[in-house]
Each structure stands twice: as structure tokens, then as C-alpha cells.
Length: 450
Image: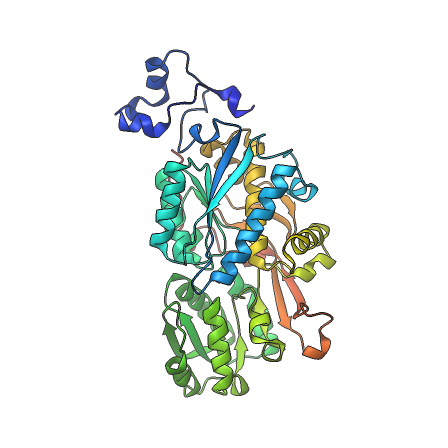
């Protein structure tokens, strides 16, 4: 059933009713106050439904960084969203492979969008998303590279009853203690990345190692460190030092001097974005990479290009997607080909996460037969298995975390690279079900639907 069939006369939004003090009576009162308005049993106003889909288009509010330490990753992510929106509006075969019921747009509505540069700052993200929700009647919001931004946007989404899709977010809290009914995450995070990496660390680096941690000082860094320590304790690894650096640090010398003096065997660098690039280059200059084996539990898009294959060779990393997955997955091949044709480079995993989130939202709306968020959320929570460029995936109902195989990659020697983009070997794909935390481990308690 289409939205138009469920709701007639959509000029008054739920917020309008709230302002007039009519919330308690909900859709029943609205119907009695405005003769001629007909509400289906599941078609009552909720969030920006139906006001946000009253016309022949719908609006999506995006929050992708173009400045700040995560600007390169945010820009890549925005291009992934743009490609997905272009594909949905044109009925491209790639997006229809993920969302088979889509024709053009979502439920026949052309998708329009706006983007705000959050600069990885939660307050800027909330200002931008609030404007999209209130002024543009956004039916969905998405984006983020910072987990602090993702968590803030999820809470806004829950309060406003407008679905939010995280872009890159590595904190366990995003679908853990800070999870929200209106938030969904597709990418890997600290727990899954650390657990997937453990067998490689045991076999390639060995047991009973001392570790120097370099940690961005916010929720992402803290929870990735906690998960790395939790799993590597199983092979006898212990922390020699834990160096916490603020997001956006440019000079890591004080932290790296402490790491160099720690006597550690392994350098676990959790920094992301420009912080990862700067800290690795400086660690090389300090001689740390000559004395310690570097481990990157959460791979930064563009990192190998920025620091060079000479530094990355032999290093094991966990990522959400690497472009050579196209060799074993036709949808990945189509995604890489179409993205590269449009943007002139191989997509990184921020673009992949954005494209996948957008396509999955369309699929959930089409299957629900409505944009009304409660029904869309329940469509996600049904856990339908989808074919994607990551293989088969499904959304967990209890925490809104996507389950998919986790790629482990290893830096190639410069002499082994087949092209300028061929930085990594795909070592393994760890089954997603094997690395997910037990449903109640991270403290997720989803909020209400309405």
C-alpha cells in the first residue's frame, strides 16, 4: 500500500498538533477536528511523516564532514550517498539488486538531499540535522565519521522520531549503551574489528606481547582500546602504555616519546583520519615502526595512499570494504566500477557504507510500503537477509547493528602492487555472526517506536 493510500489531506503535521496541545488524542482527535482527514490504522503522523512525503519528492538530511580531521573520509562518504541517491532516482540495477522492489526513487518519491559540514563536532551536527528536520521536513537523516557525532544524531533522531543512519562509527556505544530505536549502523566497530583481528595477531605476531596504545580521547578511541585489550588478553598481550590524544592533534611527539620509551613490542594505533596519517608519519620519524610491529584495528580510508606502501607493507588492518572484493562479488564489482567512473578513484569504505545504508533504507521502506518510521523500523528489525557488495547481510533487531563478514587486509610490498590503488591483499573474510557480541553484552536498550 502506498503512503498516499494511507493518508489523505497531509497539510497538518504531528508537530503542529503537538503545538496546539492535541497530542493526547493523537490521530483520533486529528480526524475529529478535521473532517475529511482519513488515517489508516498504522498511518498516524509520526516524526516528519506524512508531511515530509506529501509532495512528489522526499528530503534526506546528510551530515558529512568536509573540514576537520575526518574531512577526507566525510567527502568520500558524501560521494557514496550521492551515487546511491542518483541510482535510486534513476532505477539503476545495482541499487535494485539490494532493494528489488525499488523502481525510481523510494516508493515513487524522488529523493532530494542537503548536506551539512559537521567538522566532526556534535553541536554543529545537531544544528544542521535539526534544521533539516524542522525546515526541510527530512524523512531520514544520515552521515557522520565521528562516533560522537553519530551518537548525538541518534539521540536527536529518537527524540524527533526521524530515522538516522550512521556512516562511519567505530564506537561500541553507537549500537551499545547509546543505541536508539531510530538509529541504525552498517559498519564494523571496535568489538567486531578486534575479535576478527585476534587470530591474525596470534598467528602472525605471537603471544605474550607488550603493547603501546595510541588512542583518540573520545568514545571511539576508548571503546576500540577496551575491545582490543579484552581480546588480546586471551593471547597474553598486556598494555605497556596508553597514550590518549585529543581529536585533531597535529603534534604527537609527547605521546610517541612515551610510547617509544615503554618497552612495548607492538604499537596499536587507534587514531583515525588525519590523526592516523600524522601519527604514523611521526612514529616512523621517531623510529617506533622500526622497533615495534604496528597494528591498526580500525582502518582509515585513504591511509595507505597518504602514508605510502613502504610504511603499510606487511601491516594487518580491519576494514569494512576493500575494492578488490570485486573479484569475488559481482555487486562489489558493479559498485567499484560505477563509483570510479563517476568520481575518478576507487571507492573507500566510507563511500561503501553510505551507499549500502541508503540502499537498505530504500529496501526497508519499500518492504514496509510506507515512509512512516515505525513501520520502516519494524521492516529493518525483521532481519531480512539481503545481497550486497559485502555479501549477504542482515540487521539485528535487538541493537540495530548490521551483521556482515569482516575483511582483514594486509599491506602489500611496493613491488607486489599491480596498480597505484593496489595497496592491500584481502587476507580473509571473518563471518559476521562469529564476531558479533551477545545481544545484551554492550547494554543496548532501544527506545520506543512512538
